Length: 453
Image (cartoon, rainbow, N blue to C red; front, side, top):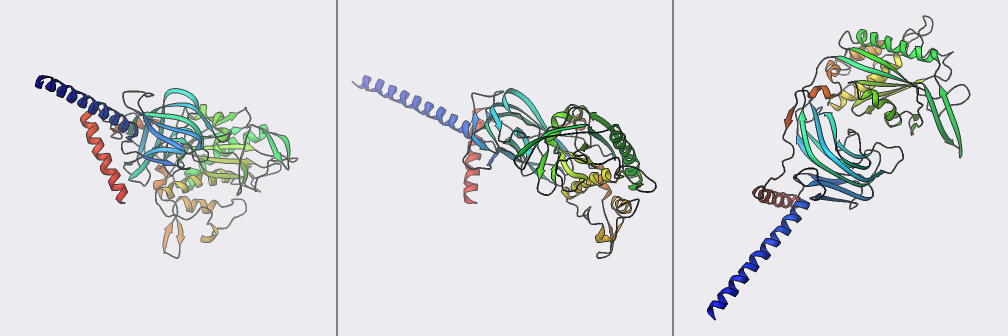
C-alpha cells in the first residue's frame, strides 16, 4: 500500500512539474509576444493598431515587431537613443508588408523608418512585399538624443495593413565638412494635369520652350557665381541640369501658396537620378500657366524650405509670359541679378538648417526690418550678401547677425559618409533563457516606474 502511494505521489509530482513547465512556456510565449525591448508605442488614433512581437513571421531567430492596423492609422514602435550632435547616422532594418494601403492616392506613407515628431523619414514600403532592407540616413543636428521609429503610416497620411520589422542596425558615419554643395536643377518640361475647379474638370497642359530651358540653365550658371561671391568664398556649388520629358501629372495645394510642386508630385520622376548621386539641394523648374490659362497660385515665383528625404527642395516657377518677363533674364536695363529667385529659395533651406541646429538668426524675409530695400536692377542682392556673410548690423543688440558660416558645412547626410561606419549599440535581443529572465525583471521594473510617474 505504501509502495503504491509512493508511485502515485511521484506521478503527481511529475504531473505538477509538467504543468509548471507548460505554464512557464506559455507565460514565456506571452512575454515574448509583448516584450518590446525598451521600445515605446505611439499611434495617432488610440486603440486602432495592434502592437505585438511575432514568433511565426520573422526574418531571423528573433521575434519581429508587428504593427497591424485594420483601420487607417499612423502607428510606430520607437526607441530613444543617445547620439552625438551634428553627426550622421544610418538606420537599417528588414521589413515585410501585407496589404498595406495609404489613405490618400498620392502618398509617401507606408512601412518606414523615421524620427518621431519630425518630418524626416525613409522611403516607404506598401502593398504586399516579402522581406527587404530599408535604410534611413539622418543628421542628429543639435540633439543629444533622438527617437527612432519603425512606422506604419506617415507625416501627412495614414495607412492600414500589416508590417513586420526586424534586424535593426544603427551606424555612425564620418561627416564631410567641406563647403562645396552639389546641386541639381530638374527642368520639368511638361505638365499634364486633370484640374478640377468649380465642379468642372479640365485638362491643363503646359510645356517649356527652348528659350525657357536656356534661361534656367543660364540661371544655374549665374547661381554658381553668386553663391561664391555673395558668401565671400565661404561656400561654392557644383551643379547639374537634368531635363525631364515625362509630364508632371499632379500638384499639391495649401492655403498659403495655392498649388505648387511637392516632392511627392515628382518623386517617381526624379528618384532614378537622385539615387545615383549625392545631391545637397534640388530645384524643380516648372511652368504652371501661360497667357490663356494657369493652375492657380498665390503670386509666388519660388518656394523653398521643403524637404526630399533630407535634401533641401525648392520650386522655381516660370512666369506665364516668359517672352516679356525679365524675372529670370539678364538685362543691363531691367535685371542684372536674374538668379535671385534660385538664391532666395536655397537660402530658405540654409535658414531652416540653422534653426533646426538651435541657432537664432534673422528671418530671410526680414530685410526691411534691418533697412534693406528692394532696388532696381539688383533686387535684394545687398541683403543676401549681408545675410550670407553675417554682416547685418543689429542696432538693438549692437552686433552683426546673419547666417553663421557653420551653415555651409551642414549639408544633407549621404551614403558616402558610411564607407567606414561605426556600428552603435541599438537593440539587443535576449539570446537565452537567462537573458530573458533578466529582461522580464527589467520590463516589470520599468512598468512599475511608469505607473508611479
